[in-house]
Length: 198
Length: 219
Image 1: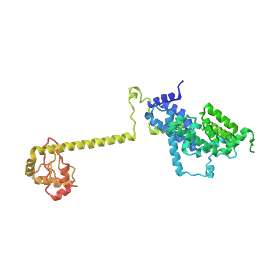
Image 2: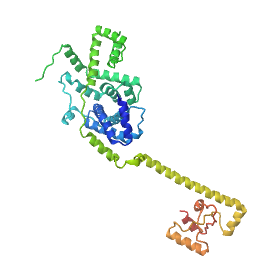
Image 3: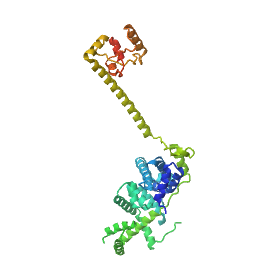
Image 4: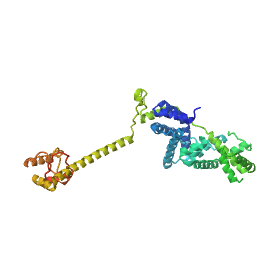
């Protein structure tokens, strides 16, 4: 059976011969994963899609520069994450919001009265607040479930650094979500009964 | 096992990197320590939630928008245009870096050839002067009535090329008054420096008689 890496390399060889159909196949293989990672970094789907478009545009433009000794996924993720990091850097300089403004803009905020099933929403919010280096490591490892070795290649840092960043991110998230996690634990042990709000 | 080590093992357990022995030791500790049991639940719940986080779906026109973005940046190759033997010819892509490199190469080539030609001309003048010797040079200059500021130029130079109409009139009048050929040239130090002879040609001498004219020529 052909591995994902072999499939990607086959597609890339065709792309290097200007085969646009192969490029679209590659786009279909990666677009959802990339949009989700970038969305979780930025918290805005439109911006995430724009950045992923820019990523694929760069893949097409620099198709002849691709080095077959690396995984294609590593290359694509690296481009996308660098774009996202630049975007976050730009935002840090200019954007400040308060909750009232976000509600006026119709941006979805987690309801504090939500049950334990809303943990995913809260986790998304907590991830957004993480420092970029912890956020990227956590998203690639725990959300995208990429192997540590691939994450290290994508981020361009040693394996040990990735492990420590992931663990640090987990510790921060665990502390941020402690009340909700505790509620979830109490429910799982049967010491708390869920109440349906009227 | 201490709680601190157990917490470290809990992280490692999320990645399933614990050895069998480590796993047993951790489980033994968890049996006894309710605080670490609680932490264990938190880590497990957190990583499980992360792995099954809701995914956003990409809008259906994503590929279409990407295609038009690519077409704006670079036209998508048409299969008809790349058919047959032509398909084997590598496509030359327009990139600003290539244009810059090409312009830099052209400037270097032009500068190099100018320098080389200047060098050859200077060599030719030096060779001519060496051939006739200093006495011969002085005799030639004296015969032509040249001063110290005057030099030698190739005969193909026209003294009136590139001059303003007023300068042209003055120069032509001067050449006619002194019954000099049209390729005699007026010059000062500045002109003399750039007036280099081509090898194998007969030289003519630039002549400067008027201070006023020297100033005008030296602009």
